[in-house]
Length: 118
Length: 111
Image (cartoon, rainbow over all chains, first blue to last red; front, side, top):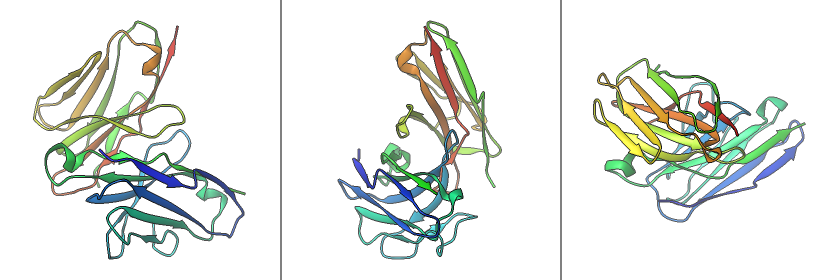
């Protein structure tokens, strides 16, 4: 298993500013992901955070808007840049811990960061 | 791209009754997983199904994976107030490491 912490847990930001969300895991993990979940909606994958290289973004998400870092196997950051009210959402960090069997696929989620943009 | 459809979106259940949520994929899956998200919480892994026709039980929860590995279901018997939350299925296609989440079934329980 993995215990994930995210900071901040919530924030209210002004339009045009940027917010960096931190994800810290209590153990080394194989894969780290960033998701967005709008109220009452499902989970949308933003990108896969790659250790030591550029993140892999999903369709509709770009690095200039959502820069991601992953300097090591336990930590990642997601920045939401030049925010607008449409960016108001919950942002979730998620990890996988293994390379085979159930651990290859099972994902653990952080508590999320609730972002409101005014 | 691969899509996972989940129905119903909402399920309002009398305490003690049974209900089922269904998940269908547009493509054959390597495996399917189920997660539960309590109100105000984050998704928590429940189970993974890998084999065609697989059935797994967790107390009052029964999970099935279809023979064609394109659909799955979660059946809850004797619903309790602790079952409140949103249940997501998530499918992983072959040759892809990413999960595709269904829209979720949000369950409310009336006592």
